[in-house]
Length: 254
Image 1 (cartoon, rainbow, N blue to C red):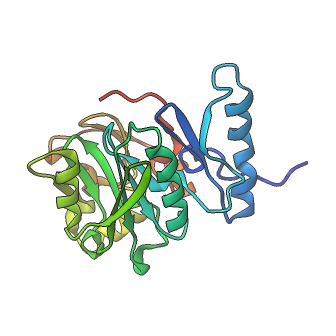
Image 2: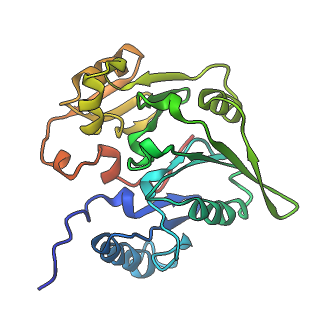
Image 3: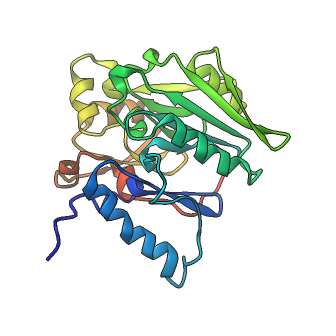
């Protein structure tokens, strides 16, 4: 009756809950764009979620993907700009969010050409207040911007510092711990990155759900004090998305 909707279960890809509203993505891929109509109907007509404020909708001209958005704290949001989420989409989304005057800083990480085909949640993921699981090419990031609101106008500042220093500054921490995928092994990291080892689901600070197949990364997480609940499935991995991609938190606690 209808063409297949193979990625509809990747709920985090299509929309992103933030503040008291949500962003609904717009996609180049025709199938992905068709799938957003289901989320659109839920947010418009479901008795519990109808009239949800949309900071972006499925008809926006710019492409925006929920997997490229990361809430760092109640004041800081991070966006990865790549081939799925463009610079202008990041700017427009930040503009809408900052107008609420609850999020004070939006950090935009411009992905280099060699990494622009991966989602931001395949590159970095927050697993505790001061701990992040990261891609082994993290040091290739060399373009980071901060967007903030001054006198009702968006101000863009280029940040001339490393990514870990940016996180330390805006999260008000003395030190950030980066846990590398597969403990940084040059061979095993490629396999476990492909198996979505970075896309774990953090259900509370220091506790994550991860795919059991990523043994080295899970061991690294445990060695850094993270409790890992291992999910023994290969079917979900066929969608080439991590556990984080199939869950969309709507209410967050500090």
